[in-house]
Length: 349
Image 1: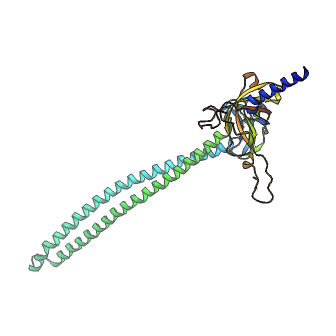
Image 2: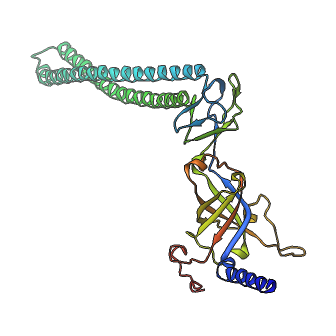
Image 3: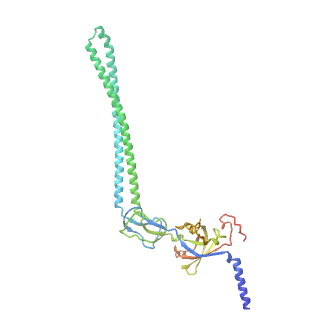
């Protein structure tokens, strides 16, 4: 009877292995992870206040650290003053252009008067020339008229030169306006940069999560890029399991996963395969292995597999990045969704 019971037990185990066990792939090389964000400063300065505590839950856009902003505020005030100065320079140049336009109109009127005087003086010389030849007028009178004509010609040339100078002065003044506008744009850019620096003096959380690795303290001097703390999105925990390459033959996205987290003392969670790494873990190492030189020893590689964790709310608060887990993937179901749209040639197995 004992032998019969043993044989029945072995048969049951063999049947379970044949129908279930051989399709379940298991690994204990699995760890919970989260896409944590490092909080760093964008500007140099003294920390005025730290607004959160260790392990505190925070919301997105919540203030975390405030840096002394007095030096940055002074740069902003200086930039705003330069903006106002540039606007005043533009207004002054435009007023000079308007004044120069009026002076050009005046010069053009003077040129017209000079041309009229020249025409009159030239006509007088033409009329009195024949009279002098016949003795009806004196030569002195003709010389005086010629002198008047020459003076009118000189005045006409001077008026024309004054109009030309005024027109060229307009071009120079317009260049001054362009220079003032460029300086104003530069001042505006500096003001925007200083305003951003003032805003950056208050460092905010970029996502919901929990504060960890808080190393910043009030009164500390920080440089741009200084690591202050880490925000861990504990509500978005996922699992990365490193399966051997020999275990991936029947694995597909969407297959169900059973998870046993060491910290939960026997609690079993459910999950789903989300994606596979585009390469083995060795491919992303700092110093990838080079198997093309020397003696070669084959080592089974591992591929990271990302798994979504479906945990109830009372357990999710206890799931933390870095905790170890044991993962079992049921590969019996090779449906279209599990195959990620790829025809599974071994779906009938």
